[in-house]
Image (cartoon, rainbow, N blue to C red; front, side, top):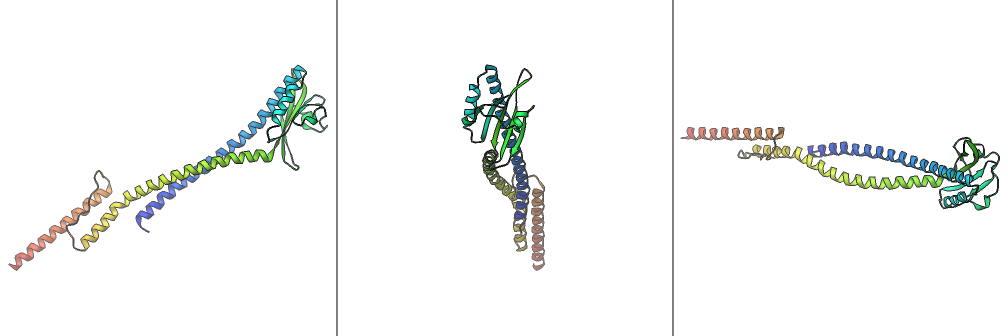
Length: 252
């Protein structure tokens, strides 16, 4: 393997490793953010339903809660949303046929003194969030919102897939720029070495007039090495000229 290829692979390995580490870290952070956003959506939905149910209780009219439940029914991620009074009688529900019925006695929403969550396994996994409806420190009802776990997870996956697509595009563009930069760096590091090898071959073949061209504006070890090589070439040329003059003088 040539020095140029060796340097190029080292640069690509270092930069590629950093890009991979950054991509994995960024993806992990975005994953946590997507999960937190989904959880925040669940909490906000339940809190909004509680507020509407409080308003309905104050007005002694369930219409506001029914209208809000109808809005929530349009969200495919919500399997159910309900508002019940302190006896467990359903005042509003995403399924209008459930209005007027009573919650099951073992319903966590009915006995809840604080917001909570429970996951139910069945034909579909449902994450139920629930909490009490309180007015003036008095419990006047309860709310419950069920979220379809499959739909919620699919939303998180779609969000992450969109992020992954953008990250892949940026990574490809960055890799192209890095590849050009790495090639330029490798060329700058190994270009003078190639010139020196060519100069050594010229000297070995007897061309003592050859000198390695020095790059303008370069002031590093490579320039010093080229200058020393050219100095060696001039001294060899002087020695050869002295030899020729000496032989010429002996001949005459």
